[in-house]
Length: 617
Picture 1 (cartoon, rainbow, N blue to C red):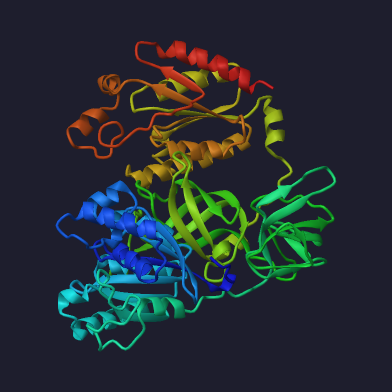
Picture 2 (cartoon, rainbow, N blue to C red; picture 1 turned 135 degrees about the horizontal axis):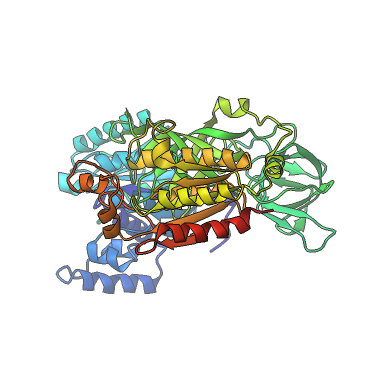
C-alpha cells in the first residue's frame, strides 16, 4: 500500500445495540471496498458454509470481524475488533465495538481514539437504550460527528417514513448531546444497499452512501494551543547528558524557547532538539521529540514541559465526568491510582454530584456508581498536576482510574475544571515538625493498625499493648473504631460507602497523631483491602504496621462480646462484616496473630516487645 499523508487518516468507531448488524456492516464494507485478499475471501466462504449449512453460497460478513470463538458461537461481538483499510481518497482505522450493555466499557475503549462514530439502528426498533448510551459516551469522549446507519430497511419494506422518523428522533438526541454533525443513511448491510454503491431499492435516498460519507467526513484538527510536552522518559546515556523524551501534545517548540517544568516553578531554555532521532530546530504537535535544557534541571516522568509564557493550570482538586468500568461499584472516599498523561498520582472521589440517566440525560442523585454508569464527580489528588480541560486538550484532560489492589482499570474520566478551593488552600510552614516532636518524646512515631473480624480480639490486645508501652515510658494513643463512632464518626452508618469514609477519617486522625510524635494504635474492622492500603499510603515508609488479628468466624460468633452476631443472624443488624458484608483478609500484614486458643496477654506481650524495637531510637 502506498504511503498516505497523516492528515488523510480517519479513526472511527462502529457502535449500536446488539444484533443491529455492526459486524455485518463492517464486513460488507470491507468486501465492497475491494480490500479483502483472495485467501481471506476463500476462508470467509468456508466459514460461512460451516456456520450456515442451510444457506449455500451466502457469505456471513460478520465472521470477518468476530474473531473470538465465543463471538462466533453466540453471534455477538464481545471484544473490540480493529480493521485497517484504505480507499483512493482516505485511510481508515475502524473499531467494531460490542453492543451488549455488559461490554459498554469495551465500546468506550474503541471510541476513545475515534473522531467519527457510525451508529447503527435497527429500522424495526428505532432508538433504544443502548443507542442512547453509546451516543452519550461518544459525546462524552468528544466525538462531534455521527453517521447514522439505519439498518435492515428491507425488513420494514424500505419505507422512507420509518427512516425519516428515526432520523428526526436521532437528530433531536444529537442536539441534546452537542453532536454537531449527523449524516443519516438507510442501509441493508447483508445485501450492500447504500454501503458502497447506491441502492435501486431505495431511490428516495439522494444522500451519500456509507463509504462516501466516511470519505467526506471532515477530520477534526485540534486547536494547536501553547506548547505542552508530558515527559515520558528521562534519558541519561552518560553523566554529561540529560534528555527529556515525549510526544508534543500541543503547540510547537523551538531551540532557544523558554519552558517551565510543571508542577513547579523551574524555568529553563531548550538547548537541543531531536525529532524522530534527527536534529531539528522546531517540533510540532504529534511529533515524538527529545530535548535538552539549559541549565539542566530536575524533572521526571509525569511532569510537563510547558511554554513559560502560557503555562498549564496546576491543581489537585477537580470537577470531572466519570464512566465507571469496574465490576465493583465506585465508592466515594476510596483511593485509586489516577493515570493522566505520563503521570500517576493517588486520587479519591470526594463526592458524586449526580449520575446521568443515559436515556434522558437527566441528572439523578447517587451515592455510588455501578458498572457502565456515568456521573459528575469531585476529585481530590494527593499532589498537584499540570492539566488542561478535556475539551481543550484531551491528552492533558483525560485520565483513567486504576484499582490499587487488582490493578484493573476501573474508570475513564475527563477533567472539566479545577475547583476554586484547590488554588486557595496552601500548606502553612511550621517550625516544630514531626522530627522535633519525636525527639522530645524519645521515640519513633508509629501507626499500628489492628484489623480483623468483630470479636477477634483487636481491642483487647491493643489495650494490653498500650498498657505495656505506657509502662515502659512511651507516648501512645489508642483509637478504637467503636469509640470514634461516638463522636467524630457518629454521622456514619455501616454501608460500604460509610465504611470507606470511616476508615478515611481514622487514617487521617492517626496520621496527625504520628505527626505529633505518638505511637498510635488503631482498632477497626477495616474490612476492605483498598481502604487499608489507603491508610498505609498516608504514612512514610516504616511508619505503618498492619496487625491482622485472625480468628475463625465461628470462634468470633461464640465470643460475641457485644451481642452483634446474634442480632445480625436474627436479621436485626444489616451490613455486618462476616455475615452479610465481606471481610477481605490482609495478604501481606506485618504481623499475623492467630487468637483462637491463645491468651491475649501472651500475644500482647510478644507484640509489645516487637514494637519496642521499632520505636526506640
